[in-house]
Length: 60
Image (cartoon, rainbow, N blue to C red; front, side, top):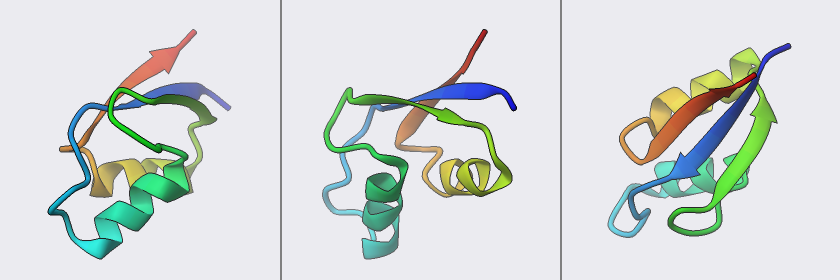
């Protein structure tokens, strides 16, 4: 399975509680924090819900 790198580029402040919980579930704790995860359908679905707050890159 491919890996992706997810970086939080916008704040979770003043967002819905659901979006805040999604950021925490992805492992993002603060602005400019980066995590590397497997690109499973579940992770990709969570990324889609907060795509306006994160930057996603493929890891080779």
